[in-house]
Image (cartoon, rainbow, N blue to C red; front, side, top):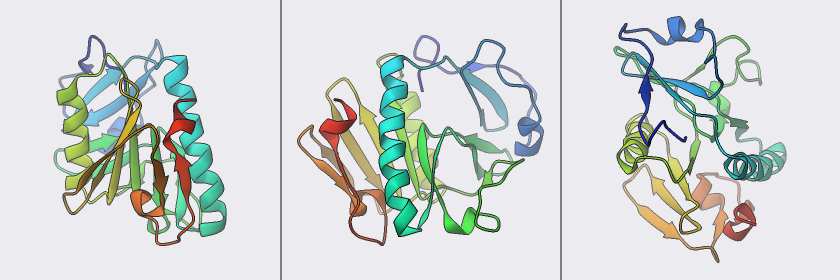
Amino acid sequence: MAYHGGMATPVSETTLTAEEFYRLPGPVHGGKMELVRGKVVTSMPVSGKHGERQLIIAEHLRRFLARANEGRATVETGYVLRRDPDVVRAPDVSVAPLAALQGGDLPEDAFVDGPPLLAVEVVSKSDSERDVLEKVGEYLDAGVPRVWLVRARNQSVVVYTGDGEVKSMPLTGVLTSDEAGFRTPGFELPIATIFA
């Protein structure tokens, strides 16, 4: 989620739908594109450590979900969070709920229509706090039950819930099924593992 100079860079002034956005080519120099109120914004490619943290989180979620069957763990998958104007966000890591799966699988040629069960944003040093909190608000407004902000600066994870609870967890904490919004108990991810 590392934006140019801490800010998202607008790509077009044309208002697009999620479907029109999906058909666009990827960014020429890499990175990530999202649709914010119908406008395309891009962000720089992430650092090596950022990408590694995404992978650690996604792998822990994937292994748990293989037996819990509450959804699918994904990395940078687009979710249509709002329509007219459309908002498509791609969390660094997410869990697509079972209800969003088509025949038990993720859509092949479209964004996931609706919010994830869990959205995880790994916060980079260059990220604007305003942009980060705007994303959290969009996720919660769209009905995402849990949002994690993984903060490298102080090696912590902030957990936001759909009912307004905010919990800051230190390096010694452990993310559990409750923090992930899972009905199935047994998920555990020590926060120190993310920053190892």
